Image (cartoon, rainbow, N blue to C red):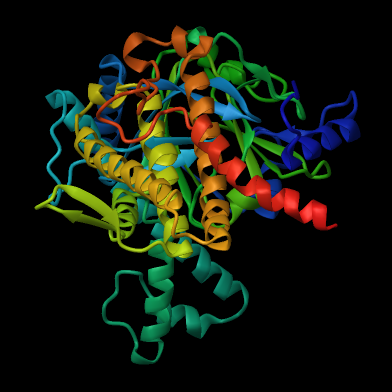
Length: 514
């Protein structure tokens, strides 16, 4: 059996390690004399906001909320895929965000527990969870406003550096509604862009306890020590959007954390959590290791996440982080997938009098579109949701209603596939027409069959079975052969074989002619 395929990232990593050899690359921490100069020159789009600059009420609410979520066992390890192999994240995670939003990373779709909104009613499992979600929403709004200010101040500074003092003066403040007429439209566009790049729609919460992490990798390039999260770019984000992170390490370290002891370490202090940064695939520029004290925030601005990589270096304490993101949601919201279902359903006619259904059109484009939507609903939504067990029920039952609606739509699409297969078997089709429709639908059915096998294997893996019962994956939808409630079997191999056989005569005729 073939092993995992090598990705371009793997090849770059191996090349970098070969170039480094046995040595370690240099990196700086704030105690190094050249730290500030390097930060300004090569890491200027990283912005630190110390805990003392954050309002006390934000600290109190957020820290209390994060602790409550941990006590209610709301954090869970994700069973992700890396190069086709299932891996449990050492970090425990939870996604909170706008109702109906999701965030996708490493072939895993996380479903955001909705934070409170006026438009959507959310019933939480208990009052403390509701307060915690509200605290994360309040933090999200604070992070958004701070990001806009930071980006605005940076833009003004750049304009001043260029000598464009007049242009900077007309900019004034982001919130100023009394803009100078000549620069109003231009400034309005700038403000809109800044807000779009900081309109955080989800917050990925992380809980990390080094004492419970069975295996922590050594940082391979600089010798920075143990990593809770390896070097990476964050995925699935709006281009050039900011990532804003609130960090909270919550246990007292005792004497080891004294300022007098910190300077005794060479390199970074291993008792403290750090965020590590480096320019992607660059061995000429030293890396950075930035210590994170309880309540510190940092902002990765503009294209920093694209040009640089970051990692999380462990300390001795347990730590929470709330990472606020502008998730790229063009295909990641309930509104989107419900809209896709509506498109598919337009090709289904139901006769309520006779109790029968039929396809409105057998146009190849419509057939292909419906079967693509069928696969998208099943593998990007239903199976992704149930693969994560019923862990969202620990916080709220909000997602179960939408998932029931999606599953009903998916069953309708199963019926539409059966209607299509029935049509293919009718005698009025010419040979060419039948070939066209089979060649259109066959690859999508083959993909469906293969994906069902993969998801079923993943659900039955040893890693999945080792998870707590309420977090174990469910292979859903799943049904046994002959289930009267399902129009088609779960295993499509026989149907696929029959369709393949119907295109064989054409292939034989082609080679006979040659």
